[in-house]
Image (tube, rainbow, N blue to C red):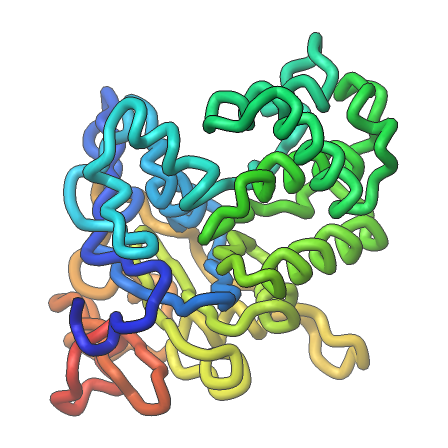
Length: 327
C-alpha cells in the first residue's frame, strides 16, 4: 500500500469501466483513483451520466455486458474485489461490500415474501436456517420495521418500507463498505430524511458508506468526504469542508450555484451546455466547453488531479503549480 492508502478500508486505483456499444466505446469511468477510511461516508456527486452509478457497480465487481472493467484495482479491507470470481466473489458481495439500489421494487422478487428472500441470501453465505431467520428479524427491526414486515410481499410495502428492506438486506452480513446508489430517489422529503438517518446509523456501526447522489446539498449535509465526478473523471476530492465550503474546481462551483438557497437571495444558476459524449469526449479538460474560467491550455491538455492543500485534490489547470499528483 502507498503511504496515503494506509488505514483505508477502500482503495481504488486507476479504475476504468467502458461500455462497448454499436456507436463506439463509452468511457463511463476513465482512470478514477481515491481511498476512504473506516467508518467514513464518501459522497460521489455529479450530473446524470457522469459515471457515478457505474463506479458504484464496479466497487461490487457487478458491471454487466456491454460494460467491462478494463483496468484498475479495487481493494476492500485488503482484498482485490476485481480479482475474485465465482464462489469467492459471491461471498465477498454482502460480507465485504453491499449495495442499495435506486429502485428496490425492481430488485426484490415480487412473488416471494421479503423475509424469505433475505433468509435465502444468508443461507447462501453459510448461516443455518435458524441463524438466518433470526438475523432477518434482527436487521428488519434495526431498520425500523416491525417483525411482521418479513411476511409481506414487496407490493404490500410502501416505497420507503421497500427501501428499508433493501438496506436490511445490504447490512445483513455486516459489510465493510456499503454502496448507496441514489437511495432516496422518488421518495418524499420526510422519508428521504428517515432513509438518510438510517444510513448514518449504519455508518456509526463501523461500515464505510459510498453515497451516490446528484444532490450536492445532500452530500454537503451527510458526507465526510466528497468526490465530484464529471464525464467519467473525478475532478475534485477532499473533505466536505474543503470541497463545499472552499470550492475550487469550476464544475464544483457551478454545481453549488445551481442549488437554490433557503433565503432566496440568489437565483439558481443552470450550468450552460450539456455533458460531453463519452464516446468522443473533448480534448483536454472535459469540462472546458462549459467552463467560464477556462484558459488556453484547458482545450489541449488534460489536467492531472493535484493536491492543493489539506487533503483537497483538484483536476484543473488554474491551480497547477507543479504540485503532487494524488487521489
